[in-house]
Length: 367
Image (cartoon, helix red, strand yellow):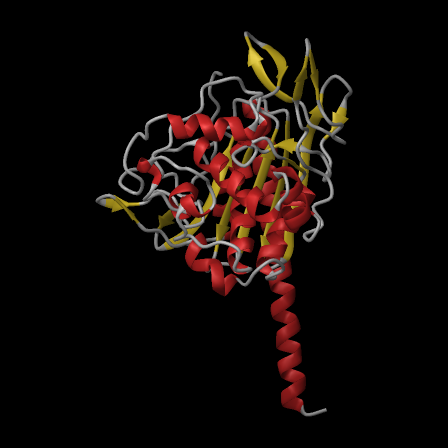
């Protein structure tokens, strides 16, 4: 074999060995950091994943999923991801856009019958970026979606669509209603058929909570983590009540295995081309006289030290997902501590992206 080729091959394997060794060192440091924070903050259970360009760099689990059954967190433990559900809805919207089924500039009037005059300028882009002006529905949490939409039509807008911005679950509710009409499916079935099955997200889903008389009925959810918070020194289990009409905005359960597969799917263009949607995930428009807080795909956009990243949190800290497009990393953190504030995913990112300013402070609040 040519000596030059042999040298190139040798250098390649040496480089790869150094990279793998460096990742192993970083993973060990992250492991120590998480164990320290769990002990300091009395966090019950955590699962993390680090994915880079479609490859799993780190997937680790810590602590307990359920104290009553003494069940440890596993890679298949289903955590309540709260508002990180919006990233699943965003993924579905991007897939629909990629397939030509819907467009950000489409008027809502194309999909919703007999809209009020104030809705005439409302577009799909206003729903995904929380700039529609819709007010939250304050009625019975078990009201059917169609009835909620009728109620919103009868209410006034907070502002003219596209002129202001506020974080509203109603935006995503109306978006899910529209997507359901396009696909002729319920929203939970849409997420399952269009996102979960193609990406092998086999663990989670919606528990389909429903009130039946004086009883509360839910679907069985394998390895469901109990969420805990501290009440006067004693841990208490609790559960968010999510109306089904807000399922596009919250209520999804996912394991770290599920969300790892989701990140890999985005990296590998399994649902749509990154080139096609990167401008939506990481690009944003003006809202009124200022830049939008949310991207064209509804993600929260940040820039530190020239490094751009986007994602979402939920709970406040039950779930955190951050994607760094240039560096190729996705950082995912799931927790069943109901008082944990967002920040752990960003702290973990500091270990892997050296140009990123270090932010290792992680805090809790008194719920």
